[in-house]
Amino acid sequence: MAGRTRSSVGGNRAIALGALAASLAACAPEGPSSGAMDTAPAVEQSSAELRRGPPSLWTAEWTWLVFAANDDHDQNLVSAFDQDALEWQHGLGGSALFRILVQRDYAPFQVDDDGKSRASERYSIYREEIRPPGRENAGPGVMVLGETDTSDPATLRDFLVEGIRMYPARHYWVTFTGHGDGFAGLADDATSGEGKRLSLNALSSALADASRVIETEIRTMPGLGGIGASNRIDVVAFDTCRMGSAEVASSLSGVADYLIASREAVPDAGHPYSALRYIAQDRPAASPRTLVEAVVTDYVRAYVEGVSTAGRAYVGTSITSVGLDLRRIGRLEEALAGLVTAVRRERPGGFTCEDVTALFAEACGSAGIVASAASTPHGGRSRNRTRSRTTASDASVDLVALLERLADPAHCGPGGAGSVVVGPDVMAAAREVLTLIGRPHLWTRAEPWGTQLQYGGQYRRLAGFHALSPFVVEAHRVEPSTGARPGGFSVLWGNPFELLLRESGVSLMDTYRATSFEKRTGWSRIFEACLDQAEACRTGTSNPHAPGDDPCEGL
Image (cartoon, rainbow, N blue to C red; front, side, top):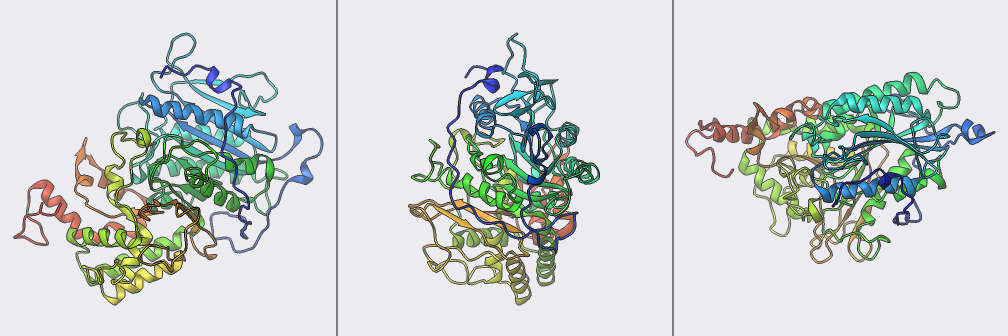
């Protein structure tokens, strides 16, 4: 594919978008957030009373900030990113009530009219036209930034802070496009160097700076505070692979209210964005929770054969998404830390690698989860385009499936009791976490009494979680012929050997230990014996938990 020219974001070609599904869920009560748990109920509230006079004087309900880390070598993926840009422009359009600001980095092979590598750009979208930021009444154009490094937290911070100040609003939605890989990070930048990415800690720091501006500057403006207005970014949405994990949610729990992400690969076509029309035109005053439910379900349904109104590829079982209330992640972390403590009381070294492997297989088998999702066309929005999984994703498991296995040792499919026996304290701790999550048991062929599927056995949507649950909505596509599905929300679990391999003196396990989730829960301690065995195998030393055995056996 030839490099994209400037006309590709400024053209007038309309994009056929998937129709927004009808009967979106009603708003659940939620109150203003200042970083603590909200307790007072609130209702959807608009700034209708402020919409007097010309639109230029109206108070915006939403500002949508798109950080497009699209500097990639793969032409198929870059072409998909070009389609995203057209969807934002012609599908959403931008208005006085729904501001859109985009910062996009381009691929090394994309050139401008002079044949030079295309510089990064920042632009607003107003009434389907590309406009210079803050100058919607000016003619078409962009702010040319020069080459930017999307893996540098300062690049993200400057975009967010300047965008928030430029477009004051009652609500803020931040979307990331590009590559993602769970706790390993996101926003790779091909021009800046292979392997460079934004860490979760750097992501959290940039979002925290942006949220401080909302609290200290925006909420003090007339009409931009009060009931329903958060002191933080309302929603962080990842149109990238594998960000639907406990580690990612933990890193954002203090800097945003809601998270939308998939624990699996996202296809090249990505999110359809049509659900955001719900903000832009139909109900600009809808609550963030309502919109999270709409976007999660619209994404999954867009890939269900026979349901989608767009010509999207039939991509197997890898389509899944979850919406989380980040204000409630703290309770989940506390409960998981309690599970770790219970396991260590029962097993001083934690689970061995043999235990980890068996528990993984039994948990996934009983839940009908495919251990390795089918590869998407062209590899999806994954940093590794040659395979559907990465080292970080290989060492992860669906959290609820694992908890169900630990809470009930007999819950491991038709084979009966599991091979790993756990005691009553571990079972009780796992049940406590499941109670907090409050997700109904799902239908499988072996357990047909669970929550049923919709649309010809291809799709399932779960909403209506209890008031204290960190889950807002979960949806995934199911393989009709087998009933197999992807997981909904992952956590570190699996063979840790590759995580310990060092590159430039740093391993992925070092990266994991720096995450806020690990610091708050001590999660890796739950299978420390397995980590010790993998390290002994890597270094050629004796396994401290089984000195006479080959430390590499079973890895």
